[in-house]
Image (cartoon, rainbow, N blue to C red; front, side):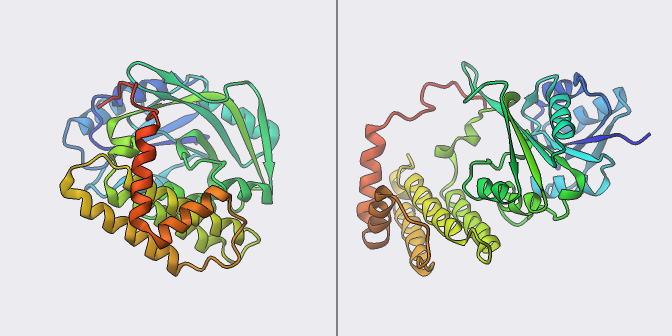
Amino acid sequence: MNCELSIIVPVYNTAQYLPQCIESILKQSFKNWELILIDDGSTDGSAEICEEWAQKDARIKVIHKVNSGQADSRNQALEICQGAYIGFVDSDDWIEESMYEVLMNDLKTTNSDIAICNHYDESKNKTLCKNVSDKRYILKNQEIQEFVIKDKIKSYIWQMLFKRELLNKPMPTSKNYEDYSILPHWFENAKQVVYTYQPLYHYRLRKSSIVHDLSLNRYYEFFKAEISRYNYYKHSPFRKIAKRMVVKRGIKAAKYVSRNQTSLSKQKEIKAMVSRISKELKAFSLIGIEKKSFKERVLLYLLLKHPNKFILYQRMMDKLMFYKHSNLDLYE
């Protein structure tokens, strides 16, 4: 009998955390699954760990490939998976024993196409979670896309369970933030989405995953991912909202670039990146945009007209604000 659920785990140099990830999947109270581990050219022993676990459980399949990124790993797994439902787990994270039983039950009892759960943010010294409760809510039709475009549904595909037929478009392999770019397409044909506030996924906060440690170019790429989303929505009823989200993302990208705690040698690079974002926003037609807040109007004015003053303002604000992760002991 074919499995009902395919769990896809891209693996790249996470040997330190991979056993905990796999063990949490093996402990699932929902048993009718297959696990597809895609080793993306790991060099730290992760590939051998995958093979060891595959020898222990026939439900585990392993693919080894040349390093080509997480999106390509997921795409290859989607080509061979057998489940009617698809879940994703990152190889340095772990999940609650009841995660897929809860999400599968939510899907079936509400006749939904996608189920989403809450998650924990895990550091070495703290476990954080927002809005924990047993409540759930249901989104239908256009309300779904409105939540996606306003980023009320975050692009964390690892906390989602999909009906297989929705994932008919491959993830883009030529860019970062592939989750963010693909989500509108995967949600396009969903007639109903169910969300539970119950936290079932443990997201490991690592130093490489915190925004202040990203390269300057990654902020810019996130801004470009928002433009990609706009191109998807520009002929839809959500065009005005999509335009505003481009502005918000541009301001946010420029903010993080400006606040980047880096060496003096990179100050020219920071100014050049902020200027680049400013020029792209100028070229992006702001006619027909959803009404902006007063704060957005002020920040947009500074960014478009006085980018150097925008940088100075952001650095001043950075000194006044307490950085939310400063008291967390992050994983390597």
